[in-house]
Length: 180
Image 1: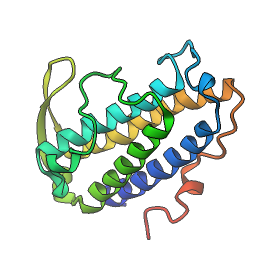
Image 2: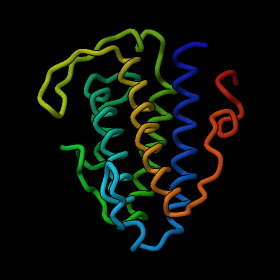
Image 3: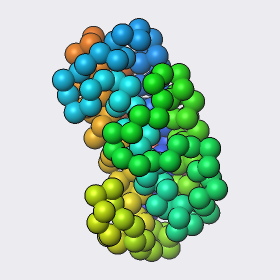
Image 4: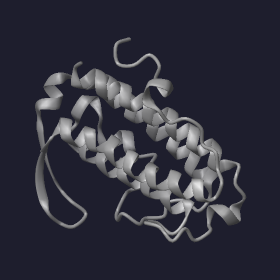
């Protein structure tokens, strides 16, 4: 399987899981969404804001290098990420709107990505101020790894609150797989 086909599949999974989890969270009362979780982030709203942060900063790094027809102009409608604990929105409905737009942009990016793009390198400064150079494929993969990591934490919190967020298995969520 090519990297590009894998990234397209992962972008579809990313979108569909975010919708699925968002729908589960939108059913929760506000006091639960803001309830202290005693976990990595203080509450469910903070988890969703951090997921936005991770995608925005990573996609922004790719956009600055104009990878796969992605440009800084594509990000003008989104908040500007500064720090990992940024709070862009205090309501889940506001987050849901931006989350849907960002997931569409990630799918568009992956659909325009080429194998040659994946082999390119970009240099950027981390939020800790360290300049690093990474392959585009590695930065793209990290978009999905970061999401999976923090969605795993979020689903643990949701489980503790008794929320059924349904199946999250990739072959079920993206039944068409990478070979369509």
